[in-house]
Every structure is written in C-alpha cells, then in structure tokens.
Length: 338
Image 1 (cartoon, rainbow, N blue to C red):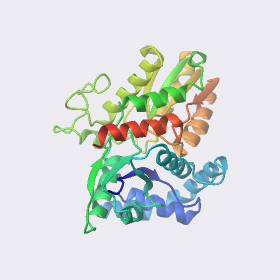
Image 2: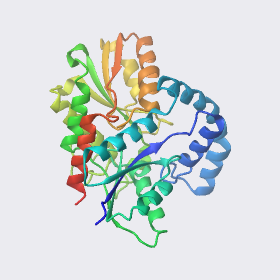
Image 3: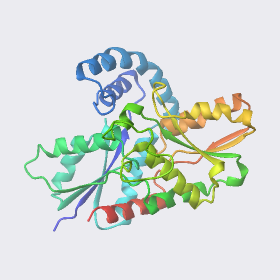
Image 4: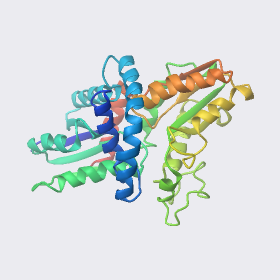
C-alpha cells in the first residue's frame, strides 16, 4: 500500500518584496472571509481599494528589510521548506509535503502533487498550535474545497490544534535553553492578536469575557484562542520553573484597539517605569521566524522598549526546523492521526 501523506501548512509570504507581489499577497490574505469577517462586497472595497493600495508600498519596504536580514529570501518560506525536508527524512510513515495558505506553494498545487502519489491517507497539520478560524479554520476550508474537486478523496485527518502537546511544549523549553532566564527581570509571552469579535464567536453566547480563559481550559473554552495561549504560556513557564509573577501574556500585531488585550507594545513601554529593565520575549504562536518575530519583536519592540528606558530585550527564536520541533511534529501526528 502507498504511504500516507503529511501536509504541513504555514500562513504564507509574498513571492518577493516588490509592490506587485506584496499587493497580491495582501489581497489574497485579506479577502479571506475568515480573516476579515465582513460581507464580501464591503471586504472587496476595503481590501482592494483601500488597504492594499495604501499598505503594499510600506509593507514592501519592511519585507525587503526582512529578506535582507534572512539571506535574500523569506525566512517563513525557508524555515517551512527545511522543516518539511527534515520531517520527511526523520521518519518512514509519511511522505511529507508543505504548502502556504496564501501564495506559493499553494494548497491547490501541493494537493495535486500529493494526489499524484495516490496516498492511502492524508494528514493535514497547520503550523499554528492554537486554533483560530482565521488560521487553522481557513486552512481546513481551503483543503476541503480543493479536495472536493477530486474524484478520489483519501481518508483525511486534520490536526486542528496542539497547544498543550508535551512534545510541542518541550520544543519551546529546548529553544529557551539558549538564554539564561535569570538574566531577565520579566518574561513576556507575546502572541499574535485577534479581534475580540472573532474570539467571541467561539461561544454560543458570543461572549469570551467571564469564561476564566486566563486561568483554565474547560469544556467551553478549549477552542478559544485566548484560553489556549494562556495555557501554552503556563505549561512552558512550569517546564522552565518560571514563577507566575515573573511572566505575563500579551498580544501583538493589532490593527485596531478592539483586539485582544493587553497589547504587547503598551506592556513593554510600561515596564521600565516599573523597574523592569531586562525582558525576554517568547512568541509561541509562531513556529517559524517571520516578520512578526524578526522585525516586530526583534527590532520595533526592542527600539520602543529601549526608548522607554529599558536596557535589554531579547526574543527566543522560533522553533523553525530544530531537531526538537521535528521530533515534536512526528509525535503530534502519531498521537492525533490514527
């Protein structure tokens, strides 16, 4: 019997930092109804006529800076490609493929490559540890849309989240060993933000507030992004013996003030006034280094922290294609895809 296929999916990146490619990437990304959840007509006007024309040039300059720091190519693409190669070489159960939800290599084209191998089964693992409709939900929608066009649809497993899997937590503990935690006054777990309205939609009463998401996972909130990122932070902190009063959870990359709080930039600016001068930042929502870690945390947040009186801000590199992350993926897939 032919081997099953494992498809690893990351978010995506422009094909180059050019205006055209950044525009194309932003348009595909932001036209996704799970990313901007407003009626399609208004989304088209907002994205195609306002956001993309205004942001593609400035975003292109940031992507150019990112690529220059990363050897002339997208670090997200490079890290995902190398990860897939290492996972493929490290086990014999699956043929391993990778795709991007937006742009290249597309889910559509990668599924064609997979179907050419006539796999016995297909396992899809988004490289997003915490479920959100805008990430893992969107990957599921696109994969099933493309599979539905095929005459033969293989047995299909989808790994929606793995925020608390011991191997995932251990991979972050290993990544942190490059740093002496005693050198820092505070540990900040900074996660990509989401609109509060999207988080609220997880619940039947459309309300996240009051669900105790900062303190526990329960039968109501186990697919709530806010609850799962707090749980990941707690598990990593426990594994590293970080006391609760030494770490904090925050959210970055907001577009409006109606996103999850507290905001990472505001938290960092407040620290020096509290006597917190040395900070180490984890960002466990990003399993591969990208614009949000290298530029936003490593440059922009470092500058604003130092401008506020901070002395030292470092960040823990993402898992990328580390041996511990490769092993974690194998364990996660073997435990969740029977």
